[in-house]
Image (cartoon, rainbow, N blue to C red):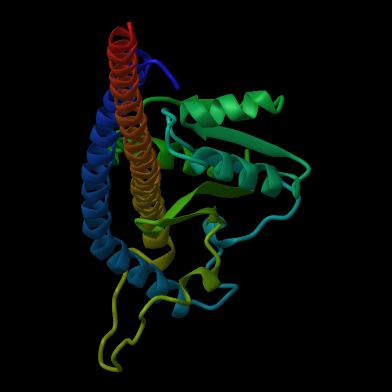
Length: 291
């Protein structure tokens, strides 16, 4: 039987750990809900923007819209932008994203790797890969300003023909208990990318684009990329916090089980000590009576 004082020390340590994991669970839950609100706010904007792009693309013949953003070029470099977290304690969130990115990158002879998140950069370094560029400190507080920076850099690299395709590897938020890694192509924008848009134009409705649809499309694409990156950053933030919430909830549950077992051991040890004392007193009393 273990010493009671040692059991109490272990119980105190587990109780303190349980307080920490429960606090982290509550914090992750709050941050996840905040990220989900930002996702909802961005949906209306993206729906209208996608509708306008679908309208231009659908009313323009395949050869008429000679725009570099809608043409798929074979044989160029592919840019992979991988979004992970800066902190751990979120289960397999980071490992799943990095594994998917490495799997997709094997399909291309030349790639450019950008990493947003300290954990992703560390995991790539462990595999002998050094990102061409990285960002830190953004996963906890993603912002529209950051989305503009990233979107602008992506558009510039594509516009300069440095890369011919752009992919973002991130974790899509499905539910609070389900998040899945996704590799999404964001450039070039192909016509089939907008097939899911709810597009039912009226016969008497005709949108006029000035000075012409192609120039309007050129101006809309950077805005679309910025909105898409912002949505992906929010999805990643919500997924990260959901993964951390589930991990901390599991850790808190395990701590509760350990506390219950330690309390049982303390009670058993205390009962054993009392029984031993009673037995010793009874034995001493019997010995004195015999004398």
